[in-house]
Every structure is written in C-alpha cells, then in structure tokens.
Length: 283
Image 1: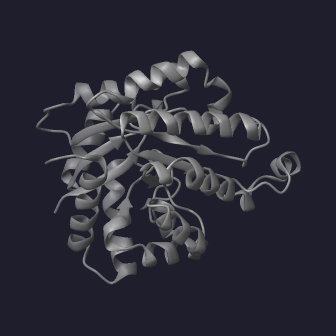
Image 2: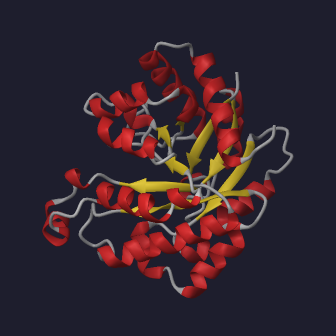
C-alpha cells in the first residue's frame, strides 16, 4: 500500500532538527510521496521546498518529494513584481508541480486588505495558467473568523469570493487544482467539484466538531479525492495537539476510508492515482 501526503510544510522550523527521521517514519507508514508546500516564511523563502525536493531526489530512505511554490494570502502585500517573477521562475521547474498555497483569508484582522489579497490571487492564477500547473487553494471559512476580522472585512465571505474568482478567471481557461485541507460545507464542496477541483482532507476531518467536513469527505467522487497532513498542523485524533508529520497521513486515510465504507488499501490506491493524474507524475 502506497499513500501520498498531498500537502506538508517540510521546510518549516518544526522539522529543522529531525527531518531525516520524520521522512523515515513516513516510509515506514507507507507514505511514499509528499508534496512539500513552498510558501516558506514569505516570498523570499518560497524556494525552500524545492530545495528539499532536490536534496532528497533519488533517496532510498525518504519518500519521493515534489514541491510547490506560492505566496500565501497572509503575505499578499508582498506579492511585488519581483516576487511574482521569482515565483514564475520557480513554478517552471520540473520538481515544482503546483502553484500554492494561494487563495483568500479573511480570518484574522491583521491580514492584508481584500483587494490586495484578490490581486495577488489573480496574479498567481495567471502564472499557473502560463506554466500549465494546478493550484493549491488556501481558504479559511469567514464564518469562523475572529470578531475583529468580521468587523474589518464585514459581510465579505472568503469562500464565496474565491470560488467566484476561480469560476471567472481560471476554470474557463483550463485551470484546475486542489482545495487543500477542505473545511467548507457540503454545498461548497459541490461547487468546488463543479469548478473541476479536487478535495483534499487533513486531520481535522477526524475532529468531532466538523461534521460538515465529514459530509464533504463522503460525497467526494472517487476520482477527485486526496488526503494530506498539512504538517506540522492539524494532527489527527488521537495525536491532536502534537506536531503533525507525514506518517500520520495513514491515520487520516484510515478515518476517511471508514467514512466512505471502503478499505484503506482502496482509498490509498484511489488517492495515489488521483495525485499522479492531477500533477502529471509518472511513477
């Protein structure tokens, strides 16, 4: 059985001291491919995930690592022409298989203004279309935003804005991608699927409070579902509160398989095939 962790932040400081051991544990848990997400600490360091993919290329003791590159919506005010040019150069590299994570986030009051976030998002979708690669979408539900953020952003809804922009500027031109760590409603999941996107589920699907995520995990078609860790965040039960790592993709996959009434081996096969198809990877 081979699993894919479709979203992990391997370049974060959390792994600075023991990344080799983390990757060994991933192999032991049958996680044989990892998408290392390249947002870094901002645009100046979004190359770090690609550097890791190059470092571990051909390793017999680590999973196959591919990477992405992108400017996170919380860093949208740093999406300068220079940063976007750097992203375009990175995105064209062989081991960079996606642009992301990108999107919209009205969750915290100190995030950039809506127009700044949307401009950065549109610019990065253009880059993805130019290099013909999928995008990884970050979108926190505005419904759960802090009171301060609701006061600043008003009635604006990040999910609705994001899906509108994708529907207007990306899908009609052949773009596709992943709703990373899907955390919306069943209705929002159906809209994302209609836009041609894949749904990826992380450890929060195992948390009892998120019944809507479980509904989405049940309705996702076999050919449009992925699993991930979002490591070092969102460790699944019973590891909640600990540093997450790619090996725990297996725990989330077991949970999602049970929700869908299939074996974990079947889910692993489906999600691996889906990942390879979406990102053009030929094992």
